[in-house]
Image (cartoon, rainbow, N blue to C red; front, side):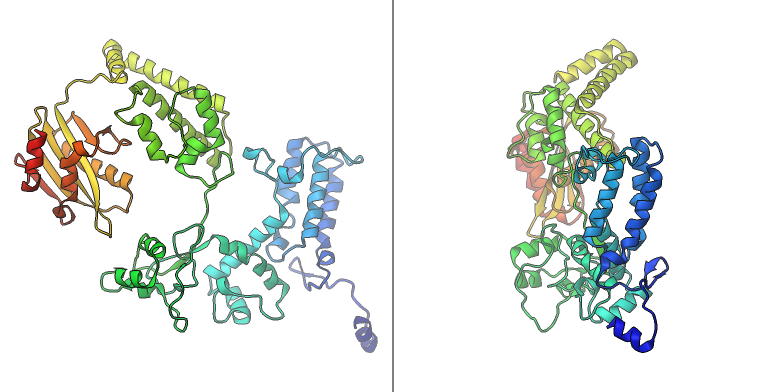
Length: 525
């Protein structure tokens, strides 16, 4: 066809359509040939670099700052063929292991392993195809979050006039730029979520808006296919909260529970956000969580083994349960042992932060040495500052020996009804177990028992401080916070937090207990 047209018009055929703003003007079927100029430029650079005697550090800088940056501009617009990406990576790998361009050399490490982060044993080089998709996903993110831009309006008018980029499809006779951006749509969808404000612009059945990493969509079968339902239809416009009656009528228990976890703010519009799954920075293998960081990560397991501490097993426990095993008042661990375990936990957390912010992880042996050195320095500092009396006090406290308390405060938190409204309660007794004061009231707290117990503890400590108490003991039925007692021994504070008055307002009683706990206080005395 090209020969026929050129013959009829008596014009010569151009082998290359040229570039505009550094990009190919026309992208035909042979895309490897269209983008071959990237490989040619890279070969020229490597030819000049091979004449230099560079160390591995110098080669690393050139590869990362120059070679892998050269195709970035083209990759942000077009999807480069996978075969071309592989060819570019082979050139980089050959240059890394080569010796001045003199023949072939042994590649002691596969390129896939060299592309891993340095803290995981690699060199931190980019995988060009994955990097290409990430750059194109940024273009898709702009189409999704900035629909009023000129680029977004042009693409929307041509390819998705009635939807957003999230629901867009390839369409008929698309340009190669649109094909390239659509190649990253699945990547964008895997981490793209709706943050609910007033719910007016989010569809209930098709948008990813539930707080679930694995499946952010509604699982309940759609009731009415004719009329698309918005999230705002599930919100009570008078109270600005979720309409529980509608939720329980339309959705299954799993969806209802996830919806009720979402806060509602009628003053803000819905926006798109990126849901980033936190991968453990120490091992890079699984999703980061508290139990994994401190106990189950291979790095943490190595640290605990080197410490030689007799700690409870990790199996079939969450972090709170495991902590209660060695921090609770009924365990056989002395205060000194508990403090050292806390020191190792802090050291593991410091190593985790070092991996995140400094891209460096200390060796487990070095971490243990630093932890023990810190403990020794702290004990020595206490001896120097406070002298012999402080030494005896520290040793007495570490062995668990305490004097009789001047007062005792029992604290508890609880949740009320299916809405799980939080409330606190505490009671203060003197050294003779005589009633001193009591209080209860509501808490602004999500459904998190440990957080509710901590907030209740804060309320009690604030009251004790404001009323001149400087010593004493505080008890709760949460072994993670302070001195642990069972629920039966904490029944007075529990009754205060569960009483209906706790949800109405803050209440305080001095000298005379409220009637509903009077029998319990009498039994406690």
